[in-house]
Length: 251
Image (cartoon, rainbow, N blue to C red; front, side, top):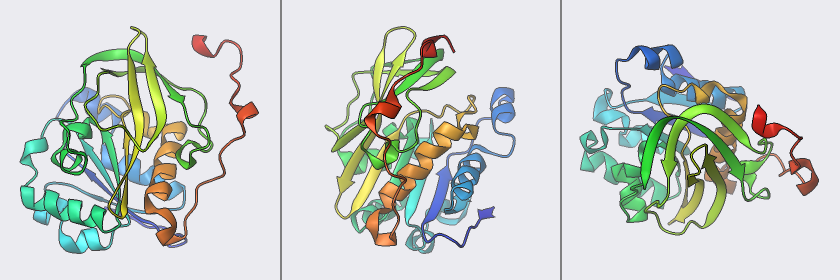
């Protein structure tokens, strides 16, 4: 399936691991998780298409990557099924200037490990927790127009320690009902490319339909594309606009 908006030059490809055949997952994303992400990008002026491991060259062929400015990568449990050759193609494209946005459990993917040099392992996880995604760098382009905080009533808890290099820029930190914290929005530069990791996005939680999450992803695409495509995110919100209304925590 291809989603096209010719008004913008940024070309995004949303690559997603096959989803488990589970009623909760089907209810959250009846048309597919990758389609929900692509639709959100298209609504915000990007040219977005979808890809997956069932396509030729596992949906990560050289021609496809050559026509991609920013690659979104969603994965959860089948990291080792991606071939080393496909990972090498993506790594080389990132080092030569393609943007990469890694989502949810993609922190343990081969491409994440290849570019960052660490395991990507986390301190623990738990299903069905309340998450508050806090903006810790309101001047960053990826935070533009993002509410403070993003509240996810029921999501998957990830917690520190998180085995990653110190990020070039830390944009978001999440707090959970059990008291855990997690660096949930990390920005890196590798070679000529830019990489952003964003943790929300468990397959049974329909967060990619939400306007606030879609804003983060579109901002991330523009930031990862950089000035090569002449794209710029909405100007960051001034500090006073980040003040929270009383009772935000009860919503």
